[in-house]
Length: 325
Image 1 (cartoon, helix red, strand yellow):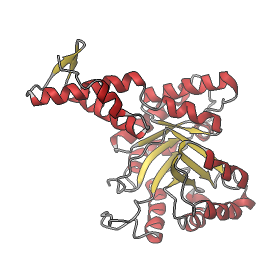
Image 2: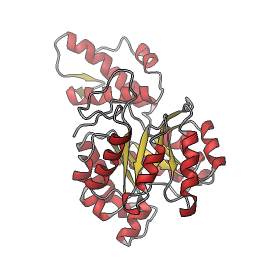
Image 3: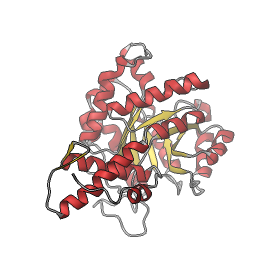
């Protein structure tokens, strides 16, 4: 299945907010973050679920602040029996962009959510996959990978819904399932994280969101966070879960292309445009061989930089005279 939504998606930081706290819900309007994930699951006590749903109906009926790119709700897992009530309530929210499904262990979990979404919002989720003009894009689904069974079933999970647009690694739950202990090196999660990043890439999912960093207080906590972000970026993740507003800036900066990377990519793209006109397939830049895969990567970097609100046009203007060597 191919994804039915054409929205440009970027989730460098995904900030969890408990939906049972009106105070914290109101605070989200001041955040500058790619994705806010209003939580109906772990952070909400069983007797507070209905009140939390009611709170979200109010929040999701208001236009999202321009400083937030995506409004998401983490519902309860399908096996709890609460998912249908969650979906029935929050899908009425006009400004909902995404649903996060926890404990996604099989294609069946995603089929359930997809069927409910299509039933409740048929105009946004046409059976033929063709969006009518003026209709909001489909609701995206983000799946949380939390167990050995989830890892084993990643291939079927990634193909289960046309609305699936990302995978998230839940390290603490995975550690509990595997009876292992998290260490600062994170080496115990190497296989699981590699599997998530690889399967997401193979399925063309735009979003891979890495584990929560439990350290966030003071300079040391933020240093640990940045190291974890860089570690995840090297493994193929392009975002991170946040549990405190102080983590957002570090995540969004680290998962955005750096200044040097954007400049190098702009130089490659500009020079390639000139090389193509001259009929040259491969050429060099500062002694490095530049061919089609390198150019493709450079274009992808500039696209991501644009989504990250980096002024790519200004960089291109600076290097407009770049020639292929």
